[in-house]
Length: 289
Ligand SMILES: *[C@@H]1O[C@H](CO)[C@@H](O)[C@H](O)[C@H]1NC(C)=O
Ligand SMILES: *[C@@H]1O[C@H](CO)[C@@H](O)[C@H](O)[C@H]1NC(C)=O
Ligand SMILES: *[C@@H]1O[C@H](CO)[C@@H](O)[C@H](O)[C@H]1NC(C)=O
Image: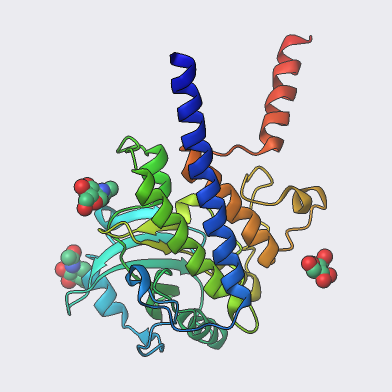
């Protein structure tokens, strides 16, 4: 009887995995097709948002007010671009402000306008920027319910929660839409730092891809955005690690998306094989004199 149960469970798990794979293939196929309006399904629109795509120039005064002078209490993280602060603008919008030390530059504004043009329901929206006081800042909409990584693996404050399979499926679907929107642009936009901790969810668990285009932007601004990626990162394609060449492309984004799916389905952290090799090597060093 337990054999029967195991068989049934195995079949169910296999069926679910198959369903997921079919959905992913459909999403990837959609990318190559002419987009027809199918915004009826699941309330998500495939089209870019019709709103204005210009990023607003905000004053340091406004941002100081919003983040209580960038107080430590408002610090919510550290990203590729720099420290991230939560803030409340005077019009009531809750925002995430990323900032880094850098003198003002015209290229930064060009890059900001490019980032703001990458607009989709499943991408975290860039609202504005600020260049003052030796700082460059990016102002994003605040996504309230944390990252998929926190939901799966927990963090220092919270244990990972059990995400229902249905939610995981809709997160996978929405995330694929966000990423495939980037890839469908001409020229295609490459995310370059796609990973589970860069997929945020709102209060309805709709996924929003964060950090889009930031590594490429830093690279173009002459900052070491890409080379700072460690070779232990399981989201980076092994082929690129072997070639010691972080040559990001649509293909490498899709590889990262695969690792994300693996984490989403298994609920476990992906570990780089490089890590395992190093771990073994260090263990061997300990045992051999
Ligand atoms: C922020 O700094 C300004 C000037 O130093 C000060 O007047 C203001 O009270 C500070 N605001 C907060 C919320 O700490
Ligand atoms: C996410 O949203 C759910 C339901 O809206 C809520 O119960 C939960 O506390 C939220 N989690 C986080 C990390 O904000
Ligand atoms: C990066 O990859 C593309 C194709 O994937 C190739 O055309 C290009 O030459 C590569 N660049 C480097 C620096 O290897």
